[in-house]
Image (tube, rainbow, N blue to C red; front, side):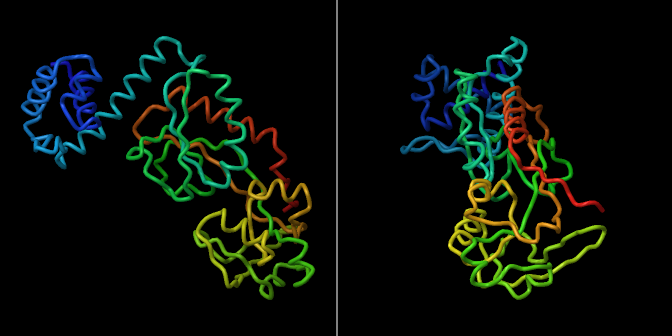
Length: 302
């Protein structure tokens, strides 16, 4: 029994829900599909599918095998493309994960350029501020910011962006412009609930930390943007997040003689898998985008 062919057959059965559907997709007879699944279950010594009048349902073992088999098939396809020298003309499907606001502002608007370079490529963009499991979700490359929680992750830093305290002119006119980090204690802060509300600053070798208070906490960067633009308060944000508004003056930086730790952007690849040519090419593309953006501000001398 050809193991890869058997895996492919099983994956098609699970995705179609019937032997007949898988047979039509694979261009073979239904008896051949049934025989392959029976041989696979015999080889593994475990029931993979439950048969009923409503169709086929994978067992718990079948679900686990399906996820692994789907990834193995993808790896085999990638290996063939690499061997054929297909890196210069990428094809197939690329699944990307990225934070919603960052992708909306900086990545998605540039995707037509990337797709024009690779007309045989299709892209799935999964937008989520949370850290998702790349293997389970079938992600080829994720764009993640900050410190990586998983030290074993296969990752490459592709950019480092500045962070600032920002607010709208209307809010600053109403509440005043802070002159030192300590002044932030008297301001309304829009707090990103996934990060600490203790903000640490540095200037000329001096460090200052302040615990900010605010009536609003939000769990996603889109909420930070919306709240700041609604004149609700100050926020610490990457310069990427408010790039257009900083350029237009709709949002202003304050405490510009103080610096905050920069924000690193990482291309993260699924652990235990070789990064595909498509994933590497996309990471290079994003790195090039950010290299052309005015996002990296020098820190004050320490």
